[in-house]
Length: 226
Ligand SMILES: *Cc1c(COP(=O)(O)O)cnc(C)c1O
Image 1 (cartoon, protein in one colour):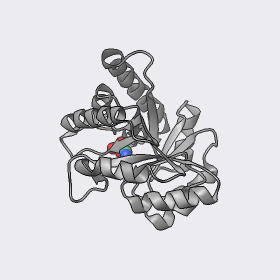
Image 2 (cartoon, helix red, strand yellow; image 1 turned 90 degrees about the vertical axis):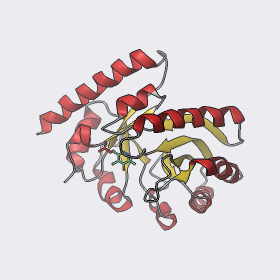
Image 3 (cartoon, rainbow, N blue to C red; image 1 turned 30 degrees about the vertical axis):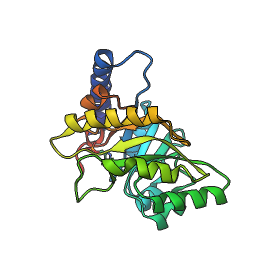
Image 4 (cartoon, rainbow, N blue to C red; image 1 turned 60 degrees about the vertical axis):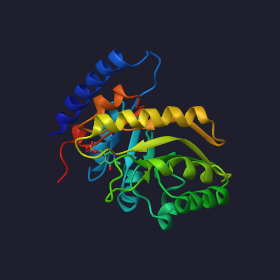
């Protein structure tokens, strides 16, 4: 079972390499994030040993239980839905929060960042399919939210993140790529569009096609979650 992880990573790297060669320019930055939810720390450490330098965490409690057991040479990003009252538990440990979708959450990140003397990097999560059940800000509210958050002194907006509706990855990624590039050219203060976080186990190749530079992969690396 453990050997599967190495086989899986090999296949994923191959697929990404092919898609990059086909669709992207050679210097383009693209990172594979290993998404760790429900995965025992030993298996997470296997992928770090195999060269994965980025972990994605969904659940505050689970992360706190595992973080000291991880090899410390991987960078950690928070990608799950985050309640304002939980920010304090993770802010010192994660270098990027992908899931900011409200001014209220951003304000709390800003407040704690200031208190700790840091400036925090975040992404805006976009609910590109406009789904009721999903977190993320609707596409038509993204600019207003960016304008509002860019007033905060201890936050830097670094880009956008999305989880597309099932079966609509390609059209969603295409729209995200356009939105990302439009917002970049609109030049908001404190908001540089450098990171487009999209693509998961079932659609990461498509995400590469549409300009993703962080693909967040869980089950295709570790096997399906129970
Ligand atoms: C679980 C999760 C992933 C990875 O999903 P897989 O389909 O297992 O690759 C990526 N992003 C977020 C936000 C997740 O919650």
